[in-house]
Image 1 (cartoon, rainbow, N blue to C red):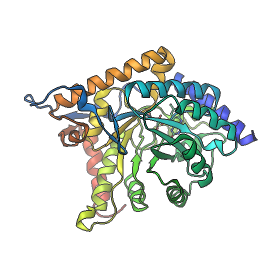
Image 2: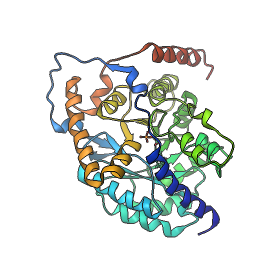
Image 3: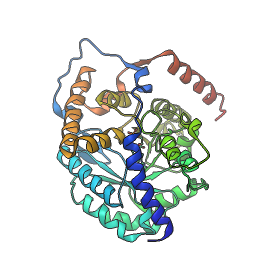
Image 4: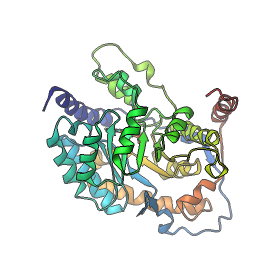
Length: 363
Ligand code: FNR
């Protein structure tokens, strides 16, 4: 293992400990969104309501376990538990970044052992600087349904040993060409702006995981790892998950509809960052997300209550979500995009100001 791989391994262990001990906020922007509930829903609360396709694979719910860890002993153990929970509940599972397999090929084994514990679709995760060769090796070994490429400039800035090179667009396009499977570009908790979503559409990216502010905060986590040069003032940086989902709607407007000759296809939108319960999942769908990723909440259930507690929690979420879908008059996740919603004055002001920026073409 070279020095870079040794640092990455130490960082992965610290991330698990710090994510566990840094509290996620109890309240976030999902509390500013109110769904319009029909008193006559004309629906039935069947468990099958939550079923949907995930990149062409039938799964039991539109939410999945999002990228966290792997490649170090504790991380591999966590991934095995997460994979078993995914298998038991019929939901997809994303591995944490496997980029450091490039400098430490033996780290692949732990990912493979976890992968063997689920029959559900898995996602692999790399940073944009990973070589196409390594991505191909990971795809051969782990048979993922899609590739996540994470973009994390705020985290890198605050990370003591972080990269300062953030010219990613060309590298993302190169990895997309090499992968031969759908590509998701994801943030890690600071959200997505309109122009970046539009830029990813223009290079033909399949999905954007907005992963916004409101849950796990990597500015706080990396700041705890610093010995000097406090960055805590940056912890509110970025867009919340709800704001990012609105940004995706603006990006869609700018792109126009391909069938009207209006340019590029809008990527699928994935909501993640601060998902606390099945209602946040439903609100994400109503705001336009196709799928929803959950990290911190599931990790904390696993670490505090064990594998069984996580399996039960996911099972309860599926059941409750099926009921909520029916409560709001829908019968499947795709129909939830039609649920009407209103928001509080603060979020409305955000949407109005962003509309002003987008419409005169200032973005
Ligand atoms: C993460 N996250 C993450 N994301 C990523 O793309 N690659 C990674 O390797 C990691 N590693 C990681 C470790 C740990 C311990 C946590 C908790 C999270 C970020 C994660 O996928 C997600 O974007 C954020 O955590 C926001 O979602 P939650 O936690 O608020 O649901």
